[in-house]
Image (cartoon, rainbow over all chains, first blue to last red; front, side, top):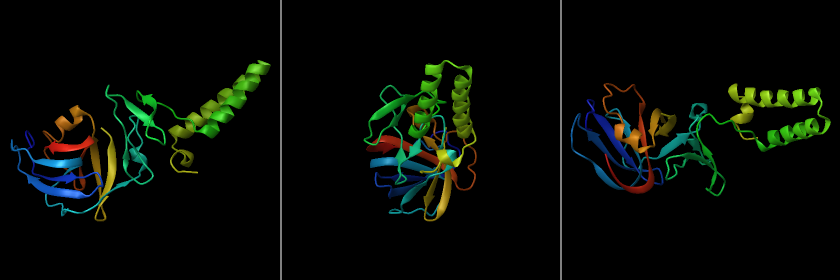
Amino acid sequence: MKDTPIPLDIIFIDEELNVKSVYTGTPNSEEMMTEQNVSFVLELNPNSGIEVGDEIEFSPNKQGRSDRMTSLNEDGSLRSKENDDGKMSVLNENGDVQMLLEGGERIFSRANTKILIKFAKKASATKKDSDYKALGKRVFKFLNAQDKNEPEYVTKK
Amino acid sequence: MDKLKIKIKDVTYNVEVAITDEEREKGLQGVKSLPQNEGMLFVFNDTEEVSI
């Protein structure tokens, strides 16, 4: 609570997303609160009414999308990984690093990637302007869909 | 800093997520008031002893 001028409820949360303990922090206090086996700490306005044993749920929401990868697993748990070098990464189903994120990445679905490869192959074979244009049009279409946040990118098909 | 919605006992909170050492160190220092149902969630990489 150092340099924090307002009182806060300090809620320690374990791996299973259960509340382990709740403290009320005194403004600008140098006193530290310590707890074992903690995965998350939540700070809220005081008198939050949150008690030991309460369960935390992560609600999947569109605002959760951001340049830096902090996404949710299907069970609602937080899915993010910070490597030793401080870089954020996308993980595959096994929790292994699939790619590193710098910020601002675009992600194509496998289905869209197949379509792009098809158009790219055709353009590469014919060398026709019209085929290159068709490829470019598809790329822009997929990028626009991401910018406009169409359902394809926020719900599971 | 990223924002995330979390739910406890049917109340939804819109919280900032502090993940990096820097973000966790800064926390809510200097914050003069917190809107209702907003706060900060500190994420620790490993389950560990935590001092706040």
